[in-house]
Amino acid sequence: MLVKEELSRYNRQMILPELGLKGQEKLKATKVLVIGAGGLGCPVLQYLAAAGVGTIGIVDDDVVELSNLHRQILYNHTDIGLPKAKTAAAKLKLLNPHVGSIAYHERFTADNAIAICQDYELVIDCSDNFTTRYLVNDTCVSLDKTLIFGSVLQFEGQVAVFNHHGGANYRDLYPTPPTENINCVEGGVIGILPGIIGLYMANEAIKLICGIGETLSGKLMTIDALNNMVLVFKIAQEKQLEIVKKEAIIETTKEIDKITLDQWLSKSSDEIFLIDVREDYEHEEGNIGGVNISLYELTASLETIPKNKKLVCYCQTGQRSKMAVQLLERVYEGEVYSLIVSLG
Image (cartoon, rainbow, N blue to C red; front, side, top):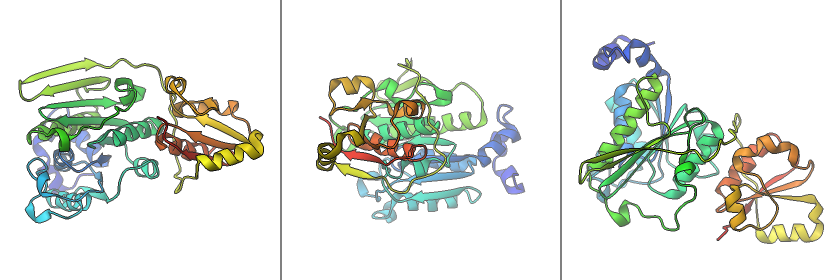
């Protein structure tokens, strides 16, 4: 229920017939998670708070630096050295006291991804590295969460909506991480560009929450700010992924290293069941044995997994295997481990 002050505060958008009182109440009832409180995160956070989104989660383990200020306009020079997540949360409270904010001053990792994401209806990826992007995507697919994605580099930005009602996800667009991570630190970025892309991301969020307009679900929009070019591409969905829901959190993930695995296998290989949780094409390119069951197909493939075995899951970097353990521990009676390994 909106209070009198909120009716006045949001009046100009509530008179839009597409949004109205019903849309405003939807905004207030929604919890949105924003991962990254940097260049993209700043405008997203500001406009979602101003629009009246009820609860906004902010994940960022970084602190404000002088070199951030030309594009991260939520902060000023007095904030240098302060945690971004906590500082952003405090500023949002000043912007709109009717909006709740939760600061996570920690890095988004496979150990905390499900625990952080599971209570939010919508996730917005404002991160600046590929490791986090793939982890955010895989988490949203596992939890059946809609994901709004954005990225910026130099003069070009991208916006997309992934996994909306089981639609295309980030891996349909970019199946595997690149070998090199190029971001704004190395490549540079015009300060205005994160604002442009961030506003599009916030706009997509409002449309999705209110159920209005045409969204970028299954589409990629690219913006060239140097030459004023805007293009929209339809993303081909490689295959329908099995959606895995997570209703409880596992605080820790059991991990073993390759030496321990080899010792277990040498003593009693029959007790160990090794699972490569990557996609089939990744397994074919190189693996350390075992069966190949994609992370997204685990729960649907339980009948193929022998009972009362020690399950050991592995992947490229350990990210997906940790998530696999968290998902399997709910439904498998035996022990489940993630292998600490990086496949070249």
